[in-house]
Structures are given as C-alpha cells and as structure tokens.
Length: 174
Image (cartoon, rainbow, N blue to C red; front, side, top):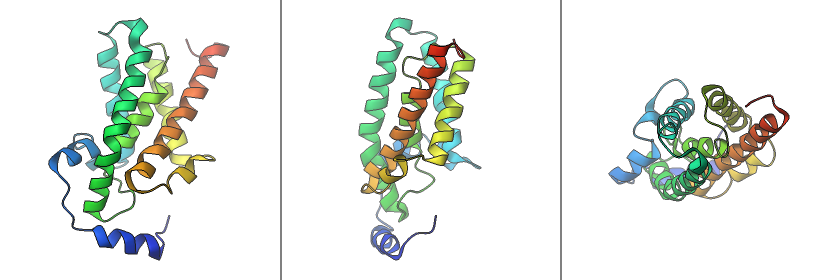
C-alpha cells in the first residue's frame, strides 16, 4: 500500500532517531524481523517453535493462562518497542518490526491442545488473517505508532483463535 504524503511527512520527521538496543531486540524479535522473505512469517514460525518447546514441559492445564499472559506481556512491551524502531527507521509499519506477529500468534494458541497439527493450523490461520486483514482489522493499523502496529495483529490473532476454537469444537481438529 502506498504511503500518503501525510504519513511520509510524519515518518521523515522521526527518521534517524535512535532506538535503544532493547527496542531493536524486542521489536525485531531477536533479529527474526530481518529474515527474508516474509519476516512476519519467520517471526510466527519462531514463536510456534518456541511455544511447542516450552509447552511440552509446562503444566498442560496451565497452558491457556501462559498463552494469555505471554500475549498480554508481549503486546505491552511491543507497543513502545515497535514505536521506537518505527521512528528510528522512519516508517509507519516497518517490515523489520515483528513483535506484533509474536503477540498475535500467541493469541491464536490460547486453549489450543498441544500437538503439531494444531500449532500448524493456528500458524496458518493467524498468517492468513494477518495478511488479508478482514474487517475491522485493517482499521486498527490507523491507530498511532506502536499501538497500530501491534493491535492489527492482535485482531488477526483473535480471528485465528475464534476459528481454531470452532474447528476444535466441531471436531475437525483435536
């Protein structure tokens, strides 16, 4: 999508502002935002792999709580990190900022039984909703700075969560 002159003017006024190291580490999710092609997909795959690894050793009845707490924490730290990195890069929503994918992907895992096909289904659903941005997700992008960067992916995660729960309920997934 082409940037408007207002976005370009606002973005260029902050270009060159340095972001602290913590914001780069968080915002790019330990550098996965530099993966090509599709840095958002790389971040979602990394999140899925980490979740599978962590969840295998965690109390299975507590997994939904862990997913919710992780999604909230990632969103809260992601907003200021995304804001700082976007300002440093002089872009409204730079592709290198992928912490939003981590938050959305974690939301898609809430109350999903742990097995590889459920994790894969949640990954595919989240990426599909994040890329297509069905109504009203696209509107969330218009929120200011890191809030807009993060919340459109939170919305995509909620859509993926709803579809996952429907698929589990009707028995397509187990």
